[in-house]
Image (cartoon, rainbow, N blue to C red):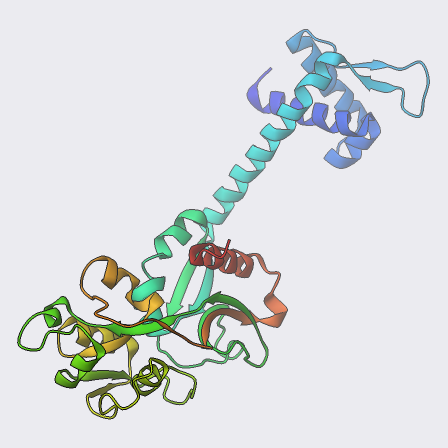
Length: 304
């Protein structure tokens, strides 16, 4: 029996085994019962094994033999694998694009470092990443999903919690030595403060003033002096360059701390009400690309 005929016969055998009926299998396979019977007989002759026998009574007179019953699970698993392989071949010709919007600093410091793992996990989806930092209209600009930083409430969008930052002073290791080494908060008087003003409109966003007040040191330094930078990644890069002390955010500084570009000279971490959320339009919640993207992000964040 040639390979295509053999495969057709195995498919007929599996269908008859589920239906216990040549007629039911024929309807599923869009052939005649006679054609199904011919395939079964040909398979039995080729393998020299009986696959079905007739029961003396009951609603279905067709019964699997013990030999046939033993191989059905493996046969069904094999067809599942074949089906998956075929779907992969189809998908390889038409990759599904997912357009996502990600805050620029978060993209640079956290998200883009992990994108390769998404592609390994979902090779048939292709990410198109927008990092312009503006809040976009998902429907008008055809954005599928995104990450937003805030309180978790945006009109017409579903928001799922992803990560929450803590805030603490960070600086270049170079500032730990020299004429005025950074060892205590009092030493801030001798160094520039780097202010991240990217969330100036959010009153709960931590600032040097709020961190010093929270630490019980509200009068320690002039909180208005220093460098004002409206980009979180640029503010941290300025700290890495040794030009001052910034308030680091957990997700944005984890790699710089691990690789020694930044250090925590002193002080505890202040929490914040704002957090990162995965967002998408409410009506797309069950779509496979959205589910895949969201579940991957949650796994990356270590929530489960």
